[in-house]
Image 1 (cartoon, rainbow, N blue to C red):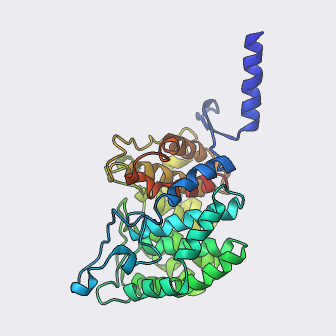
Image 2 (cartoon, rainbow, N blue to C red):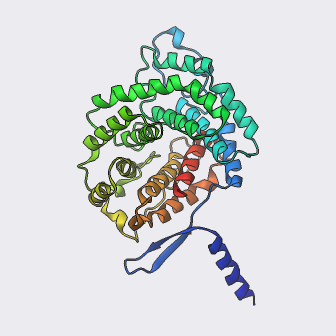
Image 3 (cartoon, rainbow, N blue to C red):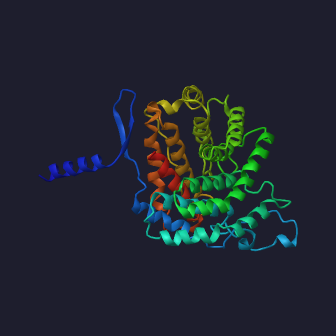
Length: 368
């Protein structure tokens, strides 16, 4: 009797949860993995991460070039909108996290607190000061292109959020958004070779988020520029060494970020031809990829590997969209999320100040 009850509840659980499978070449199921969901409960949990850092000024990594004594100011004075979360780009995507969660779950437990932070930080006066910093003599390349990409992702998310507050925030942010778009258009024609690392300067990541903004906001010059440069950089690439990844401090996968970018800009048929040369192993239904193993989450560099798990998941999920022959990649994506997701809330500030955004973006991607 107990055995039959166990079987009943197992079937009930599997029936209520979406799963992904890895199969052998002869069609046998090798592994079945539950796809994680961004539920209201999970959203409330993840909301604690940006709330715990957007107003925290120190510790802070400014990453600035000092031109004189006048540049030696506090983070809040230099960046009144984005001074928290340890560094500028993390503050930006911390605000993206709040917007994304509010857009999807208006009845979050701390919705009013989050709306208050957004109103306090993203306003005309603060954004004017942010622009002044970007226009400084030594700051033309500041946050290129990782921070640029997240700023455009924040602008895109505000555009998609149907709320009066979002319209005001988008309006106030727009002058800085325009600066970032202009920086992309100025920089990309000068970049002769892509940057293929697993950290902030990765070109494919920076182009993917900017391309998403261009598509959503119908910015044809930016979309055209990214399409042209991505093809110039990557169209002839073959045999990406996925087995070399991750490096010790990676939070992005050079191979998978590139593949996800090319999925964006190529036609379906052209992408299938390209990916079969670039990463032919992905089409194998028994494809597996070991998660990045984190040995010490209090080490600000080693915890990057939680990030690589989330970013691999969103790239694999994007590659699999609308391509049934690649749907098994969701199994690997789910494994990566399931490894890192339980650890990021309530853990050290070294990961907590940024990993929430990666988790939210990965959860959104795998459920599209």
